[in-house]
Length: 329
Image 1 (cartoon, rainbow, N blue to C red):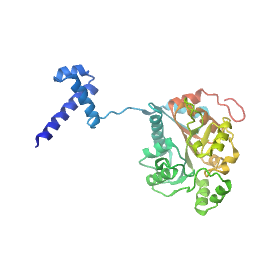
Image 2: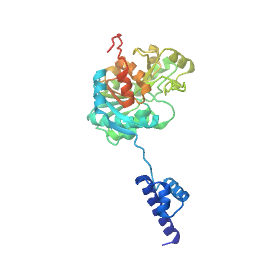
Image 3: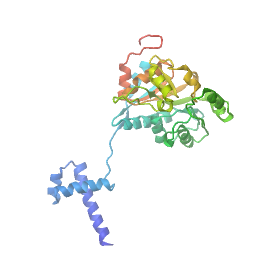
Image 4: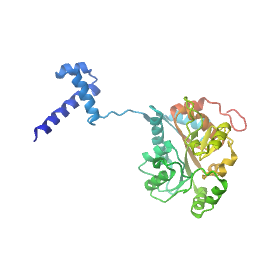
């Protein structure tokens, strides 16, 4: 045994002893220094080294536990087929990850073999797919055209991953989500490979859709992945139209009406009337700022189930449930 390796082992044991006392036993650095006969500065240095080398790893619990009572209240309040509310803490991205993983568990527990699963796109949906290691044997369809250059969040990549887990065929929609020329969009819809996917929309039994919000963040920036895809003039028109929600590349006002009916002519995705015919449409969203968007899509009758975090659920329950005909629930 070389002297250097023996020295490394001794140092590793010392780091573990100090880390165990500090992190697990709650001893102070002063106490550890006194007990082990080393300086406080060396204790601090060894704790840092233990983390940097991976000898010690720190995991934060960002939630994920189901709130059964809140889930039941949310489903009953909005007349939903089902709802899953999870406790989620941390940054916006950590909450998004927690909700996505919960949605994965919810989907696996409710999807049956032989179904046709339709997927849209979005960051929470990406986390959902990445959390899965199993799906019942099902066909997977891409419900929206392609978006951006980030392969990880691409609708095509999400459908591919889901099909590998589910063990059956996938059908991708090989066209952009937004097409500026409506005549070009219509020509693409008539292409045999694209038309095949569009025709299969009628067979979808369960759809999972990410809920997009056009509400600005506290810094005034709109948190939307869809708006940047639009030409500047169209984007400005959409922002001035009163739109607050986006799903499948279509925008909706607070009362559930389309912000611009002509936008559908430019979008390569499932249509609202087709979405309404799907037996199960599971909406995914995190963060209380998505409340108005969810309410708009609920009023549009586009969502039958929800998977959300507890803060968002409580915000939804506190909101007046005004339907499209103006009735207050």
